[in-house]
Image (cartoon, rainbow, N blue to C red):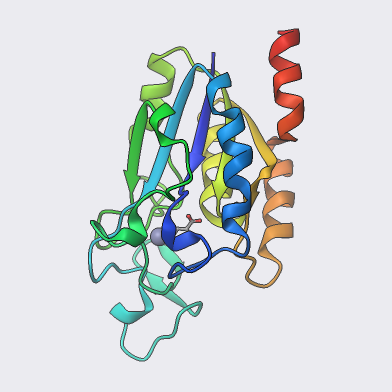
Length: 209
Ligand code: VGL
Ligand code: ZN
């Protein structure tokens, strides 16, 4: 059984948003086209309280994109984004979200960020997604969404760590790209055993299965 994991297609990560990914909305039609082909569809939603520790504004003197040492290690600081209950945290209106079977919110603990859909950034606190997927017989993940170099990358790496086969859909992801972090993310994912696939090959793959 497979699952489609749609990562953080939220207004704040799309053009005009607080932490906009360049052309972040370009991938939405690609995702909408795929969404009916999977057994399980999960949407993740970055969901931070006001004053979250990943916000530069929570650390006097710090600017967005600088880093800071938190109890669990180095954390990139971001502009305030995806604040709970704001329109920036809503899914992009063009996303075909009614196909989603589970909405998994993450990053809601004030002191711990959560890029991955499986583990928070302390790499210890679990979200419960692994159990949900395994309980439903899922063994293969297709991951898409935003951003390639943060939430997609960490979700893919943790998916491998949890024993899933993991595909990242190349034309259905887009990245923030701080200091070439998109290229680094692909390298890291490939080294860990994540496979790349393009959206048009997915239908073919299920037809052959
Ligand atoms: C993300 C930075 C901060 C992401 C979330 O969705 O990749 N990046 N919060
Ligand atoms: Zn965030």
